[in-house]
Figure 1: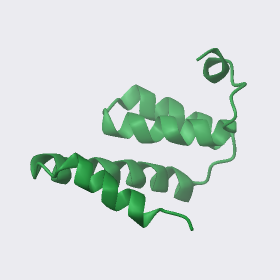
Figure 2: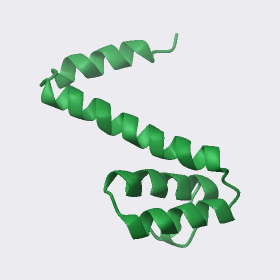
Figure 3: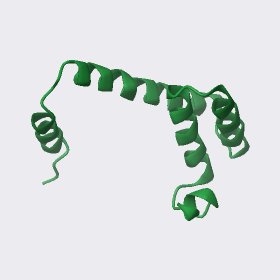
Length: 88
């Protein structure tokens, strides 16, 4: 956690701030959104990247609600995703 807090982790600062923005947009937290947008922009993020980060977070939340609400069998889902991403 210290590496994340002091910026010494393996993710570059722009990526960390885009993740922060994505999470903040789904909480939602207006002050967090403002901070992470500004910090991401200060680290080189474009408006398109800011919007895409929020859209990816929204899409993840959307599908989570659908799968959770439909009570999809988690083991079957994991097996299908493992098969989808299996490498030969």
